Structure formats: C-alpha cells, structure tokens
Length: 128
Image (cartoon, rainbow, N blue to C red; front, top):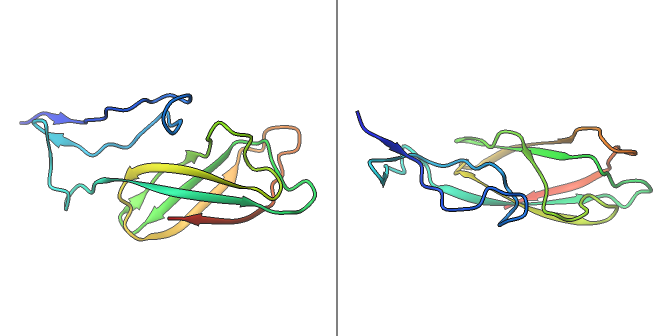
C-alpha cells in the first residue's frame, strides 16, 4: 500500500482567511500530488448573492448553498464572511474553495429559518 497525504497549509477558523472551517483537499500519494485527470485540482468559486429591494427582504437566518457541476458538488456550505449579510438591496460575495466541479449545472440555496424575521427575498445569484 501507499500513504495518502492531504496537504493543506491554511487556517480553518471563522476569523482567518475566508472564514471557512472545513475544506475539501485532493489526495497526494507519498507526498506528491497525484494525477489531476483522476483527481481534479482545488479551485475557488466566487458566489455573489443579491437580496431584493422589497420591504423586509433581508434575513438574519443562516444561509446555505450547494454548487452542482458535471464533476461533483460542494455539499451544503454556509455562506458567511463576517459581515451583516443578506440585507435589503445588497450584494454579498463569498468564496467557496473545493475540488473542481467542472461546468456548474445547478445551485441549491436556502436558509435555516432562524432569527426574528427569517423570511428572505432572494433576487439573484452569480457564480464565477
């Protein structure tokens, strides 16, 4: 057999880097990154979320998203960047680093219904 190695070299903390507390890491074998055709590289997707301009459109609930692509999905990721996100009329930007998903085919987005007024009017989402 061989050793599987998962190089990281970054903070997993809400108050460091991008605030992520989990990360997807491609395996390396015996300390070397393995064939990227079989194991795609880690990429960063920039997700811009725009809350609508309606009365009460914003939310204080925790918002989660899953990106789906031709090569896989991110799993459920909390969208947080240490700001007061998802306020009326504002666009909030988040980074999601994960294994390359290929062509993005779908987005699942929602919230956990917490807070005093959790309802949210989502205007649009852009992923690049």
